[in-house]
Image (cartoon, rainbow, N blue to C red; front, top):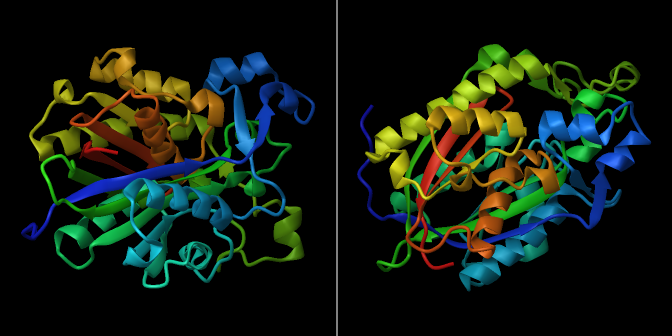
Length: 337
């Protein structure tokens, strides 16, 4: 497959994230479901997670993160040409949650659409924005990963309800103008549809339209075959890392920080061991937020920048894995943020 010639380079010009105020600790979960703080910590690495209010939607979280990214980029919402929102917990089946965000932030000149790639959603959205910028089609794109997973959980299923939290992260992707602006160096995306039964929310689509039976059977809640997902997740994220490094003509020594999908500390540790990189090069905030699906890597990147774990000029590798199965990785050279 031929690769189109780049007219421009793309970079992350601004970044922001938002999590709800409500904190749900492992001790709180002990009162809801048959589990314990020790069981959750040792098996997942999670201590607490954020939970949206009943009246908070995914677009509410996304809009808060978007406004922070817009402020960071020092642009006007009217300068945004396109909004790409990655989510599996949309406000509605349609219209796109990106359209709700557009209304809330007054980005009146933007086209809008959603991407559904589960936990890999932000990386898919970022790679899509990269192509629009590099081809010259758009100048400024708002890319969001936002989820209210808590609204789609079975709170009696300890295998899923302890893992997830709510949150949003956003980035402004723009054309590179100066040598200090950084660059989205390379991206790699992949999927394998034979695993669709292992991680999904089966109800509400054309296969199982909403009915009394789908509600009674909890088909509108997340279903996951944990041990099978674990095995594929490790190998798939390693595949994404090695493929994107090869495309960029880099190796692990060239990467200042790896930011993996924040799903399970054992997955992250297994990846680190296979890569043979020191723990300090792998960013983890899983303990505070749990798995926020499409939002994990962008929330983590925002936090890594804010606490100076990474700095201008660093090469940062984002990698994620999610239902579908989908997986992918992106290498960023950070500019001034």
